[in-house]
Length: 572
Image 1 (cartoon, rainbow, N blue to C red):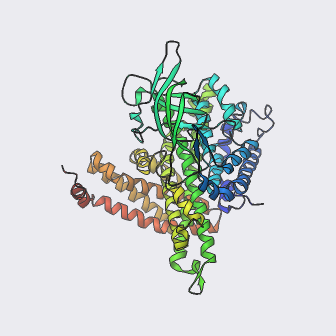
Image 2 (cartoon, rainbow, N blue to C red):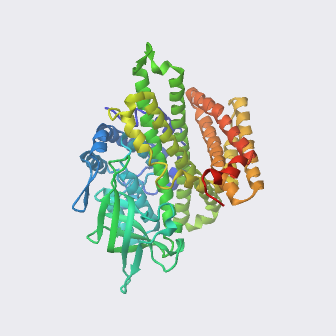
Image 3 (spheres, rainbow, N blue to C red):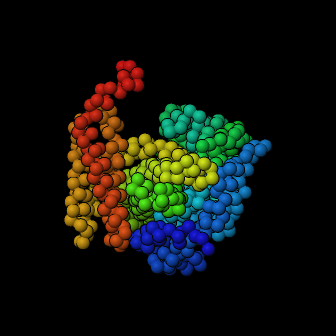
């Protein structure tokens, strides 16, 4: 029986060698629920066994109920009839199978109907689902909405809503974007008005809302008579007749996912948390969770596209031999494979860091007597999560686009036709470096950590591990790359000015990301000779990229900075 977990050698490798012990201990609060819930783990080994079983079930559902029907879902898309959205039948069936397997609320607390699964494991399931059908976004949305409510909602809201989400009985949506407020969420204008009895109503339009047809949503709305972020609050709403789905978008890709335009007409809503904290606290937390989901989506699409290209290259013969034996093709395929595995290592390291942050904060909140003891670790992992999350989203979304692009190239003209899956993977990949914050915004989110020393601290932490047995030449290359990044950071600081920092930010972030992934691949190589070949090849090309970025930074981009206004006819 086909299974998208068991057939993935690298995913199995990642789970086998991932250190989750502290994460499990934090999430399970020293296994305090083992006596209360029959499926709660009693120790670390039991927890790992549970996680593997969950991922395996997800892998079977993905292979049997999603991947074979993905072309049909892509062709059918979604329909808006009499104000209600109808999804493709296989999408509905896949959701029903997940609900039946009790996997629609994996990360929620057990008391709310969930499995208390860490984000690391959820990211693996997200990768598997995205490999099968990248348009299947409901699962990630469900976790994001429920997790946000568990973190910031009232006890009544949590008890009433999260079990519904856990059961899969209702879909959910993150309702942020507006026609004139895309990435700039401070410009949100949808109005939340408090009535005399203390209740709230919403009025306005939201656009590009993934799964906006879901019955439960978290809405960012302007509740205060002030501009900017501090005038915004977060609201929980349950869709009724006061909210109209005006249209579903016709999109380039992810056709199975409904993207809705919504009109709110005095729609009843409930305040979540405090007034004025909707963007600065709750939405930023929610979006960081969503960005991790998109990173897993990117890895899933990259895996799917690579597999299609590799299979085709082995079967397709030209000039008397399979094209996989031609240097122009096998170099592309090898680089695709390395890119996917590097992105996967970065994804699960990011998820591990975020899990540590969330677990530590959870214990600190539930056990105030431990707060002082945990304060240092919490501060560290808050900084690390703020650095890792945007670079994982940036790298893996860009990687998915490049791997899907090259997969079509390997197929040649046939890859341009709908007869082959790579055409769909290419279209589906394109949204990943746009939604939940474009790549350019991920650079903005990550550059602070690079300039403040967080990136170098992470790199130095890896370098301080025991590398006995690792090639001295590789370690010297890594040290040189680290020094080059440090020097480039200092050069940008010395140049001064926000314009200079903004101009070179992506180069610095890409240099830091390359070094992080190189260390992660070397860590993997401790357990596998094949992984060492991956690491060696990645590092060989990485040093060229880092050198190129550093030399351009040293040149101060003189010609570009002097000429770009004239090139673009911007005037003074």
